[in-house]
Length: 178
Image 1 (cartoon, helix red, strand yellow):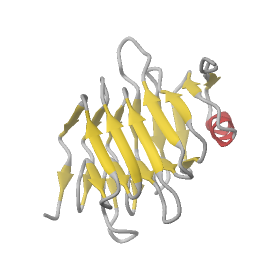
Image 2 (cartoon, one colour; image 1 turned 90 degrees about the vertical axis):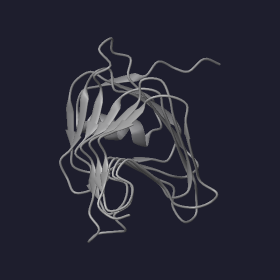
Image 3 (spheres, helix red, strand yellow; image 1 turned 30 degrees about the vertical axis):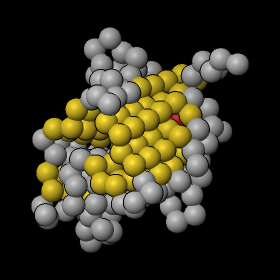
Image 4 (cartoon, one colour; image 1 turned 180 degrees about the vertical axis):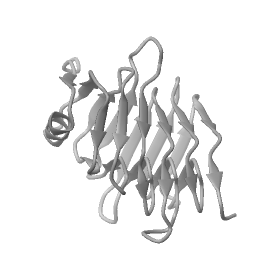
């Protein structure tokens, strides 16, 4: 059957609730959040030209339980943005845990201005940290201006994890350790 239409969301409460229910969502306004959005069921997030801004000291997304988070941006301007994440590892997106994989498919949108804090974790993956699972990037997806001790843009942690870049852009990311 075809994917159901994404549910329109314009505030953090509705966004958290729909994601917890495993519903695909489409942002209709800029949304500030203070808690990590936990993705335990496969779904699509359409940024729709809006800004999803973390205002707390944590990852924006945590993807686990073998779920796949697909991030896209259907806006004509391709201006959808995920920003503000600041965590021990995976400022923008943290993928997987000790007992399950997570998967990120990013075809649009920009992860920007995310960082890691080595005093709260390993300081790995300012944009995306693939602890266990996979990350596939393509289309108009971008990771820009992210910082970390290790891997300003993307870090792949284990040999069983993968990062595939079929398109998109990673730019102006910085790592302070080499």
